[in-house]
Image (cartoon, rainbow, N blue to C red; front, side, top):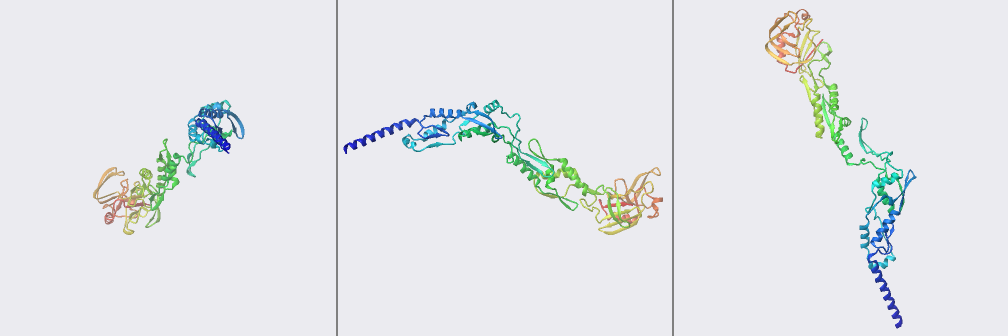
Length: 460
């Protein structure tokens, strides 16, 4: 019984000595069953572990394939990689407690994903090694960045970037690290082709598209001749272009062209028009000074300013006018003077009511009154008509009580005390030099019932 106790004590003393020896041994070594990545570093000092790790990496061979065909085999040692694993190894070492070294023989301690930030291969070195194996980017297709394009059908849209066939050497270097760490040896070059540097989600693309959308979403409505015309989004997009700094600009010429098309469609200035006359029904009236049009230059700039302001706008366009009803489909209205040269009659309507109907004498043969859609542009009383008579070859100055000019060629309505009769064929033998000779009572009534801009329709 006593002997047994002695044996047991000796055994315990032996185990204790072994344990303490192990503690001392592992105080500067990694414990058993320790792996770093794919390398077993059990029982090694830090220095030896680093040496083994580098040796293991340098012994690796990577097989490169393309289109499922092997194109090269490269040795990791030829890449002259940078192995900065000391700090990670140090961390692993410090995390292990030599006091519990015994348990390491029964439990594996594996440290994975430890190379990604610690091992690097220089892109130039990889390029040189691949070139030595006949692999270069010389005849490969470069990646194509995403772009913003425009078509009349689709407006602005993103053209997706396309991956080419050029090798991204940095990407290949990272793939080599991952392949080694996964204890594999094959890399498909298709996986390391260069990607576009700008894709659909890139900030520069999304920012520009956002600007385009904000611009084209503006509701810009022009009230033209009684019509509300909202400029279509597609039209606004067609005006947009970008300078070298990707600053959005508006094409002045295209906006001008659009405004001019509105003017052509709706404006009345310098256009032949149909008119319902008192005696002849519908007649054609040639262009005169009456009418309105869109001030194309001013309106073009106004639209551009509205777009840059970025707010919805509903307004009338900038217009010019001679007559009292600008920006109207019917600028004649219901107050106007009508001069029928065929019937030698003149009428004044005020608010649709006939106020004057009178015989007249118009221009004689060789000095015929020029027809046209005109408007009152000068009104004088007790004045002299001054001019030159091309028939008698003398200058004249004739007093009149009322003068109402209606065009830019000195044609006007006035009293003519020298006329013995009005209407009929009087114009053929006693016609004026182009003015409308009118009975005193009639011109007086007209004078006090019209104003500057009142339409004057002269026709045959």
